[in-house]
Image 1 (cartoon, helix red, strand yellow):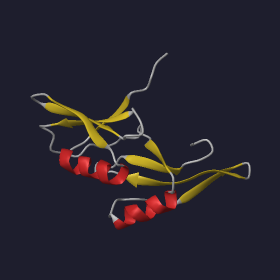
Image 2 (cartoon, helix red, strand yellow):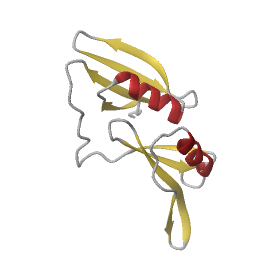
Image 3 (spheres, one colour):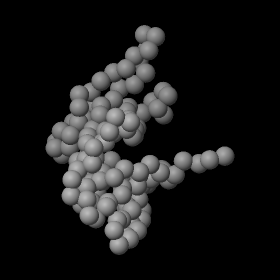
Amino acid sequence: MAKPVHSMIRVLDEARSLDFYQRAFGLEIADRIAFPDFALIYLRHPSSPFELELTVNFDRTEPYAPGDGYGHLAVVVDDVAGEHARFAQEKLTAGPLRELNHDGKLLARFFFATDPDGYKIEVIQKGGRFA
């Protein structure tokens, strides 16, 4: 059986990305592996073994375009409204709070954050399917 271990995105500015993911989601560096032309930085939250791998290509000067195939990463939080307010206070990019209903029942309360490279991260209220 396969076990998911990480998802990777390419970022332009390592310091800016590390600051965003630490302040926004409490992700910390689990490992940083430097090569002559690039670095792989693995970020992890203490509550989960799943990692976000940031790839930094040292010769890159232009921002990456996320493209039309990328969807989003998702995280769950205990208080989505509180997190939304915290993002505003921290001046972290966050869209409006939304609700998704299905068959007359609330499926999810969420908002989308955007990292410095334009990647979307869905922040979902913990509960139900997203426990």
